[in-house]
Image (cartoon, rainbow, N blue to C red; front, side):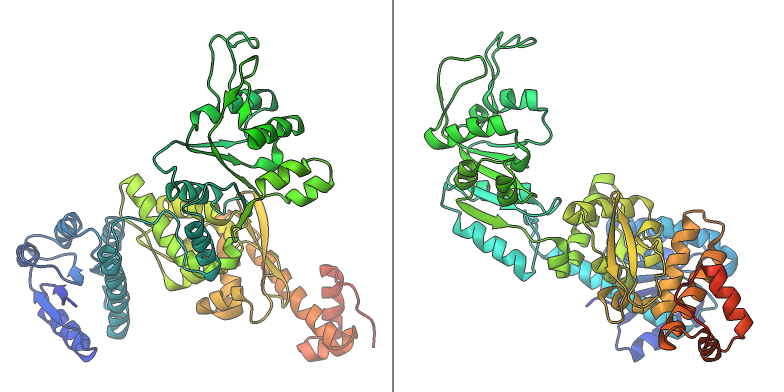
Length: 495
């Protein structure tokens, strides 16, 4: 491991940090000015850089700029006086990992440097890994089963039906099946059958002859012809109109089809892979999907797990999407704090991997600073009702949908949020979300929820006897009677 560099014109600060880090068995190298550190940077690089902002000659800003140009992933901690907090924020936005405000607590400084060190080592291990990103990421047992299935199908041309919730990556799996098949050098053509109007879908699939219908000025090749000798991926096959299902069945049966308005049969040498988020068996029972087509498509079924079934993959996916998003925007990659990563791993995320990717794009653009804390996440993720009440749920609005994470004692949500202070942490998160949303009655709303939760719990313990509940809560009888009426609590009775 490389040493930690300390750059400060104040010898006492250098001495204190050197001694504190030496006790942690961490090697250091010190500089009294930014110029010497920049010169050394031409020959070597540190694991972490700690630098003051204001120094004679070149400033910490100049050093930060030089470091980020040469080593974008190197964590830089800026030391600043309280009077320079605006400068610190500017440095933070310029790529600093974090800042230390003078006078600082030495234990907190060491803790911060250790965090930066862990981040630096993680970045190093990522850089040392394979340069080519796998087409599908996942270490969870459920995903390993998917990978094994792709491997077993690698030399086959068999028809595959991919099932799974929306956003689980069905097209990625279809691409992987094609890439590792004997048809890999031939075209891969994808079509979402739910996204094409019914009147146009037949032409999209099979093509049309000139003059076949109004607007058909030229002959057009359909997706089956475009995918000749390759793979045709039909997404959301469950939404295909019933009459078109008959035509698709005919192609799968004998390999022949007609263009719309055509009289000459066309021969198709195409491997068909389909996908759906729907229950095709139920659609067959409902008369919405042909049973014979279902059996033609369901030769090999490959089910993709939801993100809820592979929570251990969420940190891997988050880091990948943050790197990907940063590259697309030309900015430095954001880092998730441990508490924020645990919080994300506890969410339901009904939109699955697609929703997680969108969330990472939001974080890259909207989250302040380089290290993302729980409070920096979208407010709607933390907005809820009666979040602290036992057995309640925390609504998590995502892409217009509302999921629920159990907040019962011992649940994944409380375990993830415990790092922020148990039920107080939950309360803080809900308050932060409401404040960020611009609500002006936060104190009143949360106060009423708090009182309601306490009184309901006390009434449950006293089997509805309000006077006994008042004694247990340490409030007067008149007070609990008034609160029960104000809060609209049912089930209370006189002793």
